Length: 228
Image 1 (cartoon, rainbow, N blue to C red):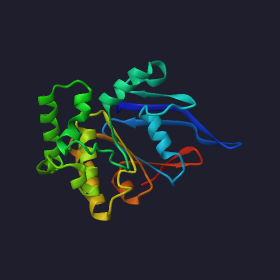
Image 2: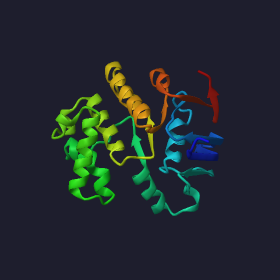
Image 3: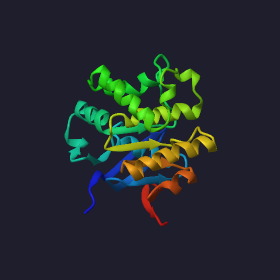
Image 4: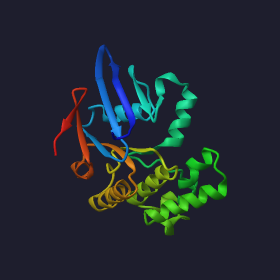
């Protein structure tokens, strides 16, 4: 039996806009298997990012539960969820969120430093990850000196440096041109195939969907299977 490392049960989420209630997520169940690349697609405004944030412990559902590697977010304290998130989940967003005052190597090492890893080990691991994605030569560069595609590669390295159980990527190619999209997707594919890194992406980009091993569509608040 394949290991399930992330499980969501009966997730609901609503927002109030004026006098209207918008039901974005309706009783969603989801299981993510270790080593798979799952892609959730859907148009803008369908709730993809909301779902990803709930799965990653960045937001709370109105009801339902999320369990990551046997830890149920609903039954533990907020600071414990934060510790799990910082230790086990690598986030990649549409916007890179790099710290402009630090260079590439420092940005990549930051999650380890925050988690209490000593400085030498943090920078060694950061440099190794940058080498893996072919970007170690830019370790001393500041974010302002990088292109959009380069910044997103650094953001991916930062997500990988903690050796996460799962990468959660929210429209990771949303601000990239075709060439940089291909570079990023090929790096993710290599990680998934060679290192068995578990990846969950949400996107409306069909190029991302082609790389995934399993696809779901979020439509009218429900998750539906996509064949092929």
